[in-house]
Length: 330
Image (cartoon, rainbow, N blue to C red; front, side, top):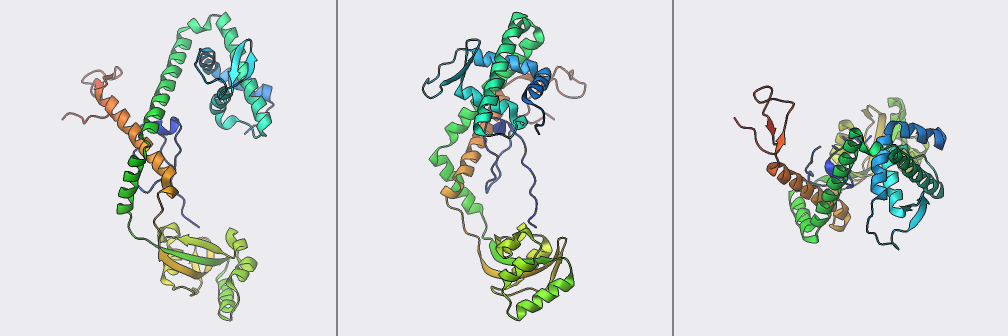
């Protein structure tokens, strides 16, 4: 019965590994697979579509990188190339939602097999001098740029997550948060007005609301005695909210019609919505200050960059030089 919220906008910050948690103030936007085949068939299909990506990933895997050996152990080798624990995380991210549902050990075997195949196929591609092809060079350079971008954004976000910065955002958000009323209510949902009136009559004769909800209500929360917990007015459909907020503590409503059916409501409590503590929203604060720092970084770099639109000649359809962060000249 609660309203559906719109999904968040994708942004560079999300791509850089930040969670998409909401916060009490709006975070600044930056810019912007079900498994039924056997592993060999699925893998062959993926490689047929993404062999260039495998070459680029193999370049990253085979490049010499200074790592803490104990913290990042070698878990396998493919033709002499080490596969480390951290590489499994990279592979899982690359596979994404195409990862089949499986247990931890099966997943580990799957990822190691995936990485081994990436390496041996990339080595075979090297034997055919594919890395010298212009299109492959272009793909590898793109992957390099993307990895550097994501790392820079991650570093900027982490550096911004100081206690001082997060406390400042928290204090400012609390000041801007209005006092909001909440109601704690139970309800019984039935299909017809007649059923609702019969339930209302039973309640007036002293029937237990929670017990009756378990027996009669078709709402998923019936098992909990129809308990909806605390909610604000905008979290429920208008007809239900209006009725619930007019009732006093302990009162029972007349039958109420909504798009879901007929409801009988009982108010358990009314209060001013409590302010969340700093610790309760710390994760959201971290997300917010990190995104803000990343947005500022991107904005500043855009202002100092020269971005030329060669697909739009000067005087035809727009300016030849594009700076998204600067106002257009009049």
